[in-house]
Figure 1 (cartoon, one colour):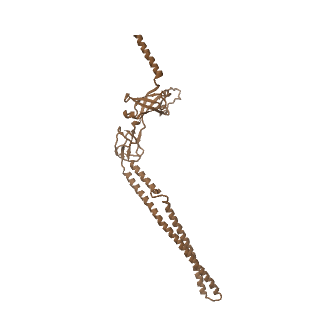
Figure 2 (cartoon, rainbow, N blue to C red):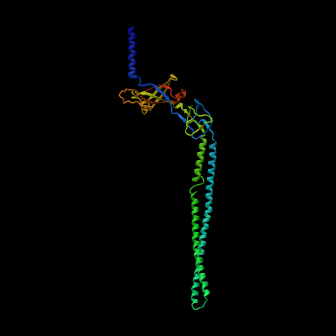
Figure 3 (cartoon, rainbow, N blue to C red):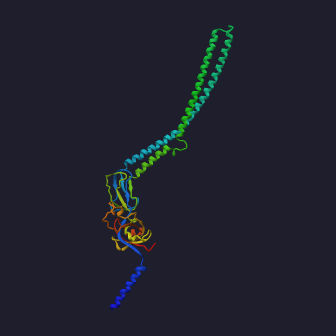
Length: 356
């Protein structure tokens, strides 16, 4: 009987050796593993007094659900003011377009003034030519005494007056040309403010519209919503408190996006590669609930390398300490829905290194 029992034990031992050496998949296991997640900070993007807080810690929320409501009096006033500025900009552009017609009329009128001034100049030059001829004739007649000295003096006076009239007419032509140039320039400057654009696409209107859009965005931000689905935690806001932009008021833990940080010993990672399957159990549910995941990647350094006070291994009393490298394991979201986990829970991870 003893011989039979010994043979049975030996057979079991041989079978176990064959199984572990040739048949069983190669695995690496560690219980130095904890759940983790990328926390979503809930941060106000505009300041204001808190009017309502609609959630508490541990409360599940959906993405987009209202968490906090701020007093929006200032933001509503800013929207009204920006809307008024936008309407004023539109009216100014309409006025610029209407002014173009008026300035066009003024430019045409100044052009007509140039033609009238030039006509007056031609007439003045004709009168001067006649006055020059009269003076020439009277000088010839004054020699033999055919006319009186007074008549020659009157002719000279008319000649001088005609010369002055020509000079004045020439000045009025230049004045009319300058006025026409100024009118054309004024119209061009006015047209530059609305050329190549409609009222809606005018730069001034677009700038005012952008300010209105910014004011509306600030108004919408007085209602703070959950960035992702998850569980509320670390709530630091109450009714009546004044929050500032950029200061977190709570976090949302996306429990369906959990992963596990497994701290394998450096000697265990020789055959561990990204993409390999892993099975996991938690201390929360016990071995009856098995999670399935895959290796996502490895940390950039061991835990001691990033410690606040790194180890001084160059000292004379150095003792070798086996290092551990954080290894991220992605979990199945469907399994997390059936058996939710929380951040920081202990896990046992087994990676199948025989699978690619």
